[in-house]
Image (cartoon, rainbow, N blue to C red; front, side, top):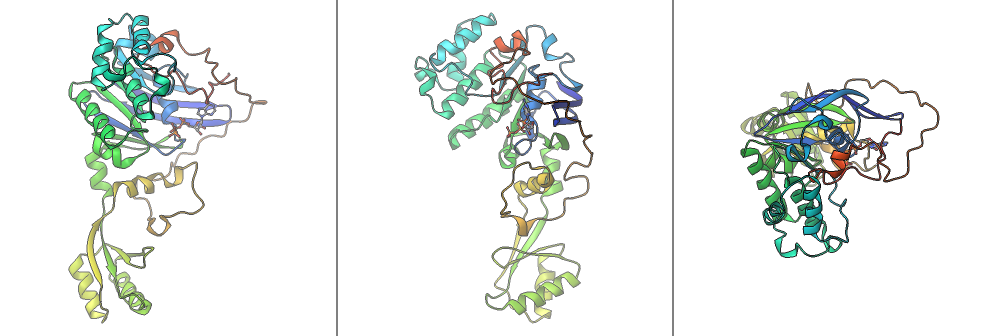
Length: 370
Ligand SMILES: Nc1ncnc2c1ncn2[C@@H]1O[C@H](COP(=O)(O)OP(=O)(O)OP(=O)(O)O)[C@@H](O)[C@H]1O
């Protein structure tokens, strides 16, 4: 089990993760969801001992990663599939990782088979597509046959067949009793892959619940109602009647009304009573992606100035939404200059060498120099 308690990480004045507490249990796939910049990679790096928490702690099986005996055989990770020596063949890359951790060479051929790279095993990885690189990173994570697996955005760059393969692999690994923690920014993908969800935004916990609970809490039913085009007065009249009867009414970009809170027959009766003809009256269910966007809407770092879902945005449900906790301001202590990319003196040797930690860290995100 992975357990984080009050986990906080600051980079100078930037708080990347704040007071995060959660558990990732064995035997299930736990999805780690959050928009870009939410703090997923930072959290994963702290779990793997590649970044040091500013406050709080995170353990795997009760111990911090750096104190885990024989870590490469206990914990496997895919952080950045591009962190591979491109001049080496896939097989040699895995062989060197295996040798560093005392893993027999035959295991290399086994994992190459598992990820479907056996035919290109002797080809240099710099010629690999993004998807092949992801498969190689997954192979590295599986090398030590670990009980705990972390995957940071594993479906990046994969085609639909590859996505299905990753989904089934995650499920299989969990069904074998392993702890599987997989990050993504795609709710739709996680809804199909994960049993449990941990959602963060701006480094803070937004939700920690089973996928089933997430679906039942967030998939509100609604009706789409369309009055004849070119009769805006009919639409206004109906909208007023529906609101008067207690419905929530929003106008969609195509002019249809999105009605929540009333059953379809009642909407039909109200239209009839208002003498309004209908061109459409259809039942719908809000997508999980929309529920997720609603939940994280206040916690998105980078957003287009044209909000295409603006017309559909509803108030977040109680208990969800943007982080309520106020992150304390951290005064800038002098000039903060990160070290040059690639300098990771602080990373533990075990983690750097670990076949399972396929990518020690993203060189574009230097470690806290303090
Ligand atoms: N080494 C670092 N120095 C300074 N800021 C950092 C560093 N690493 C991460 N950050 C910042 O911390 C925040 C969280 O980043 P992180 O990469 O953990 O998010 P993420 O959820 O993994 O995002 P993405 O999905 O885009 O990869 C971001 O604002 C990022 O710019």
